[in-house]
Length: 181
Image (cartoon, rainbow, N blue to C red):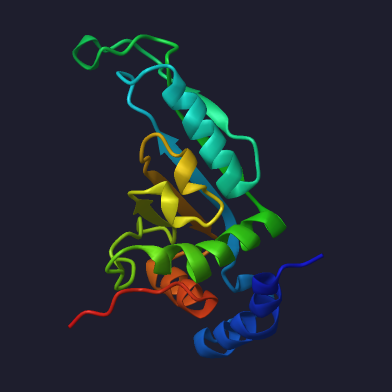
């Protein structure tokens, strides 16, 4: 079963970009390839912090996260090699479109004083990253069971070759970019 956003991409976004950018082939039109959601946890927190982050990320994405471990020891940060420092999930295909739809339609508008996401967060190769400071903007999270607020990074990887193409793709998909005044 295809998600609502994927059908929107096939029906309107792809044809609009095909006409506006004058692509010679339909396969040249940029598309979403994957979304990576990453939660970093401070190494100085108690051991339950990583478990809470895993539980929250599982509820938000619907997939089991992978635990990130430190590669080397750093004494100044009280970090030891092999210590758990975060978790991440990579979403592809239908799950990716469902998550993007929930992010754009329900989660981002729940941010206090939200005026849109920054247009400057592109990496130069058509990928976009946004930082979210609080996991409670997602409706799946029960506010009564939260012990600590935890931020996350959401990286949207596209097949676009430039930032302009990626911005147009994300705008047509419904990403609320901030307007400069």
